Image 1 (cartoon, rainbow, N blue to C red):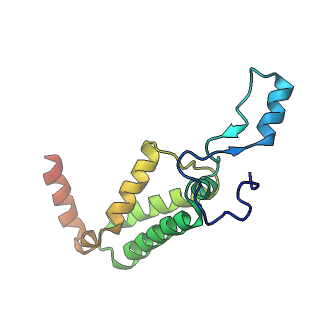
Image 2: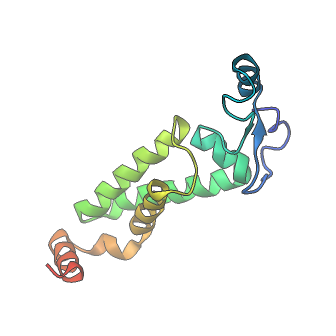
Length: 142
């Protein structure tokens, strides 16, 4: 996989980029042409590598800056447990991008970006926990 990255780590290959895997090509020859995966992989199985493949190092840097800014704001300024807990959840999810989470468009990744946007909102940090509960009750008609 790193053949595609040689000297091109800072450049994006775009949303429809893919890479060639000798591993899947060799297994396809062993098991027969009709079985196995395609040697042309649409995304890396590790999230960080998928981000680099689709957007380059600049995209990874931008995402990392947004995540670390939200973590810093929620730890330093949060007066309620809700934003603090959300920051813990999406921080652990972001750490798993380096192990197994795939960077694709699905409900799990959408929830990651929603949690990131909630914890990036500085107005939520000044709200006390009791007031936050009242807001949720009013919004949900409880």
